[in-house]
Image (cartoon, rainbow, N blue to C red; front, top):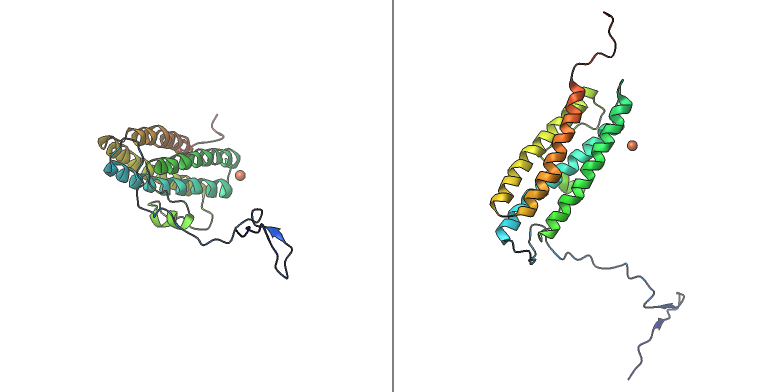
Length: 203
Ligand SMILES: [Fe+2]
């Protein structure tokens, strides 16, 4: 029997072992199409999982968008409260980024496929696209509040739908991670839009 050679020698190459050579030139291959559901033994009907995956991908697109909106406004902040808002918006960005991971992994554990890349997010999100340019402070904060309200409305609807379908895990995640966090962030942002005088001349 011919012995398999572990070493290949070509005229213009230094000899290398087959096992040590990383095989990085592969044919790209998709193993699960977007929109399909893999069966997992989690005692949850396919219909319930399909519905939750679809609702969660919408919430994922909008959460990725508000996450990035927070970073945009963190960078482009201005005015007398620059330092405070610069830090607050980055804190909210970090919290949204953590929930992005939670939503995407919930989709995968239901057997679905999560969206991931910016063009797919842009296609799916319901949050209006802001201009590339820099906006004033009330506009930046109002945009964030508008995005929060869109997410909260769809999160409440999705939580109800998951509850009715018997998907307790999705219902619990939406309420505990998405609704509570967005409500808290709305409070912190909205308070900055009250009329405030920093000094008084009538004392
Ligand atoms: Fe920063």
